[in-house]
Amino acid sequence: MKLRVDYRASLSLVGTVLKYLVAPLAFPVFVALVYDETVVPFLVTMVITAGIGVGLERLRPDPDIRAREGFLMVGLTWFAVAVVGAIPYLIEAHGIPFVFAPLHPESTLANPANALFESMSGFTTTGATVLGDISFDSHTRGIMMWRQLTQWLGGMGIVVLAVAILPELSVGGAQLMDAEAPGPGIEKLTPRIAETARALWGAYLGFTVLEILLLYSLNVFGVDPAMTAYNAVAHGLTTMPTGGFSPEARSIEAFSAAAQWIIIPFMIVAGTNFALFWHALTGDTERLFKDAEFRFYLGVMGSLTAVLAGLLFVGAGFVTQAPVDGTFDAAYLAEFTDRIVMQVEPSVRHAAFQVISVVTTTGYASMDFNAWSAPAQYLLLFAMFIGGSAGSTGGAIKIVRWYVILKSIRRELFTTAHPDAVRPVRLGGRPLDERAIRGIYAFTLLYLVLFFVSSGLLFLDAVRVDLTISVLEVMTVAASTLGNVGPGFGTAGPMGSYLTFSNLSKVFMTFLMWIGRLEILPVLVLLTPEYWRR
Image (tube, rainbow, N blue to C red; front, side, top):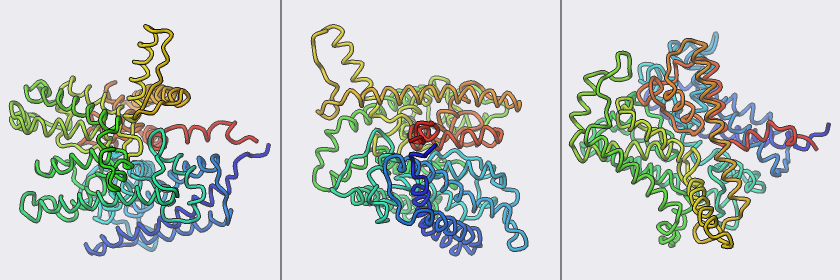
């Protein structure tokens, strides 16, 4: 059987991306030097990554990329960067025999399954963690900053970045970006696809720098001493990619209300189609506010925030009793109910922060929502399926798909009452092709089927290893990993981790994060015989 895919061309371009991944590793090296820490984990990773990259490049010196090779290259690239991204974690925990002693042998990332989970969670901007202790006592500052940086690199897209800066990828850049970009498609902003990629990454970098400066200003002016330069950079790197990793064990709860209010608009920006900001910066500001998807996106988040704020304000948003072995205790519950119930600003702030964090799949937490009542938690579970805009860094199903589904349902109701009427579904004033609408229904159905099947498999594995977990908790774990949201409920909640799950479940969730980041189909198509056969 002759293969229809030039896998050598795909592997060659994977090697190109890996070779240039050495450059970002210089940043945690710099951080380690600033804090007088060892740089060995990063230098060794640089050597290994460069070696693998150069070796793969030689498989096809002048690769030609078509659609099939693009799917294979993108899928393999995301898996490969997650593998090499786990190397610093393993070296920190195990060291190098006869060369370098372990720094933190007690690290939970000593387990290869955990290290790969953490790395994949970083690059896919999921934010789910298996760290047993999130502190500088258990991990170096360099390692923790590398963890943050993986999310920033994965946010706008490893391949989109490569198309922007590597001329050899520009020729097939349209196919590569279409295979990687979140949402139904990516808008070509400029005549050349490489220029479009640079425009997107330019806006991404600009918003990141602006957020870092605003967060650090809270420390400079004495508003939030906890927001040090390190924390400002760390959270700037994980807000814009809708990542959610934090070097603080308590996530954003560790910071002031002012810091939370600053992060909220940046999460909204991160979940917005970045093409709209490019148009605004080039003088077409009206396009941002006339965009139907953007207005629907704001309306959904505003509505959910209003409902949740009302629940928190009247006290119906909290449980009445703390669990015996939960992630919070009675003192924590009493403290936050006193702060929030019948208080307007805290109710609105925590509701807005958590709704926006979950809808955009950022995964930050302003408090432990395990302490919230069933209605409040089910609202968050619903929000996990919404997602950000197409062309944003957000995950899940995406707001534009829900918008089209609702409009098509409305169309069906109208044509049922008026059988002779012809009424196309419009998006932004333009009629949508019926094939595109069917594609949206197919993707959404596939996503929901995968969610329910994954929930069942994770629950069965939990029973196998005698892990006590409720159906709701396992559903949020499946939704969070497939949708790249981050925290679930229960032990996998915002102040907990996924550490209690078996290695088998963690490997499966690593797979869910991988296919979820690439919108499922580009990975699943690689598993079909028709893709490979001539």
